[in-house]
Image 1 (cartoon, helix red, strand yellow):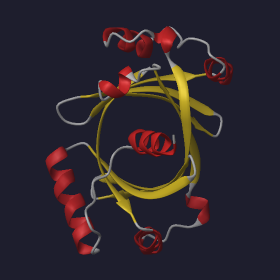
Image 2 (spheres, one colour):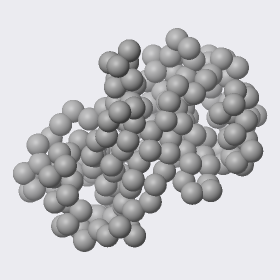
Image 3 (cartoon, helix red, strand yellow):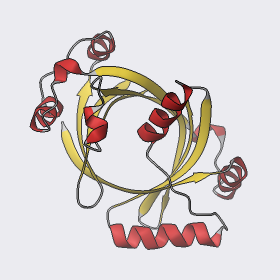
Image 4 (cartoon, one colour):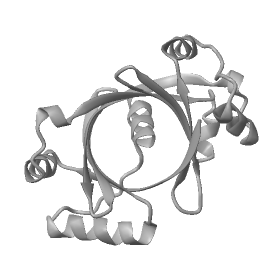
Length: 193
């Protein structure tokens, strides 16, 4: 189990901007990996109301249960490693296992017994170190759509913001309002209803 502060900047990209960045950084097919996020909330979306998110992430045969909660700067990620059998059980309706994530849910007033999976999102991702941070190139597939996104993960908010803004500006990439993946997924699913 671990807790980490996530500080990242995001920007949605057009397919042309995405392709140009992939070419600029010399990314090849073997540089990409695929991960799937399974998102959970209560039937009345109490986590979403609290600006929190709960997911299980599958990357090859590695599974993580992560609760993201807002902090003054960034998001606090509380993570537990899960065995494949635990993931299968949770996806089939079992409760969140005992541990730090379940404890954090309880402190938020969320009854873990009411949680259910409301969807999944698959991302093809590549990563590159850049000026003491990590650039992340994502192509995500969810519902009947897909999108392209650039993330910049850092440890210092102010320096990271300056570097990311300059990065976009130097490449003529328009800065766009970019909700996180779970909100984009949620918005697309609910537009379809």
